[in-house]
Amino acid sequence: MEIKASLNYLRIAPRKVRSIIDLIRGKEIQDAEKQLKFITRRAAGPILKVLKSAIANAKSNFSVDKENLFIKEIKVNDGVPYKRSIPMSRGRAYPIMKRTSHIIILLGVKEGVKIEKKQSAIEQVKPETSKETEKKQEEVKKATKTVIKKSVKDSALKPTKQNWVKRIFRRKSI
Image (cartoon, rainbow, N blue to C red; front, side, top):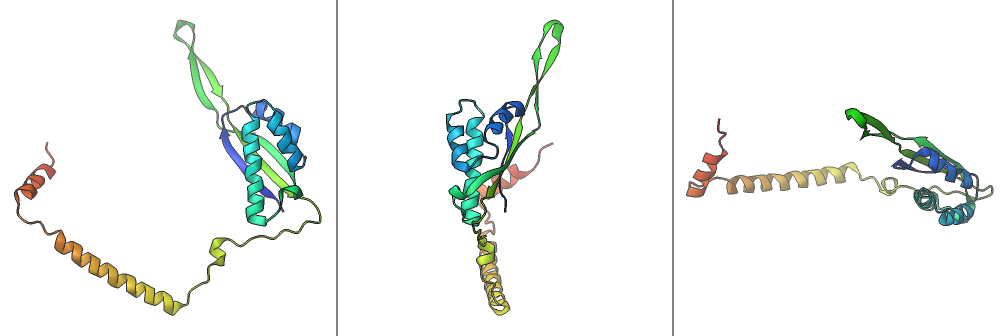
């Protein structure tokens, strides 16, 4: 079973992110977290954040503890570069590519650990019988009819000075 987390459009060049990713590839979670906390490069913070997100996914979706996980795969892909330019001599513009990265982390579970996939909230809801749903639909229809009738009565415009002014200024002028 693979647990996945990703970060898209990180505004750091992929070449710089890969240098940090190579240090933690294949390690256990505790070792990788310790390593990332003490790296002073700018990309270490976002990578640690994605790693914590993957751990949270494992806990909430599969009820797997942090001690039973390791980094199975981690990769960085190029994102869409921001295209900018810098002025040069004789009125020219020199292009600059501000590169972005997509980080994807796949966590694996150690052998011998049981994985229990939790049911989503939608799966846990008990389906209603058709008679109950029909009754609810009829109640909703009755309630909407009464609301519509009340709103039509309330919205009838009485001929006052303010309503006359509103009608004039609603018109489009040429």
